[in-house]
Amino acid sequence: MAYQAGRDSKRMRSRTGRLRRVLMILCLAPFVLAQPAFSSEFDDEYDPTETGNPLRIVAYVLHPVGVVLDYLIFRPAHWLGSKEPIKTLVGKED
Image 1 (cartoon, helix red, strand yellow):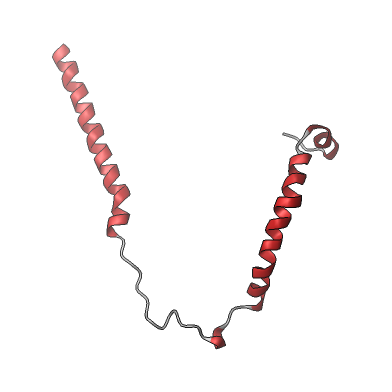
Image 2: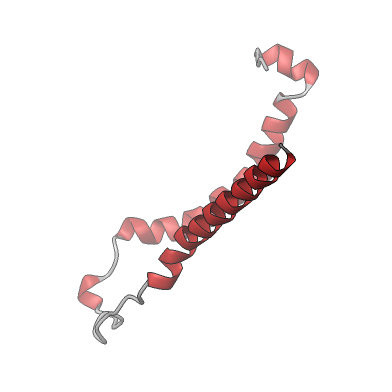
């Protein structure tokens, strides 16, 4: 009986080991099989006739302003609004 239990545990370990190897191969396969992206030498050149959308330029300027407002106003306001007397006054529920 003890001999049979030993064989069963060895089978389980070998199955677990095989499963780990298969999972490791599946996880590493995309990195091993990946190939670099090739581009022509003309893709990186600047073409003034194909400049970006003017709204993109505005977004470059306004994004840092939005981040500063988020950290200085909106996040502290949310934190204050989640604390107890204000939380009840504004009707926020958990």
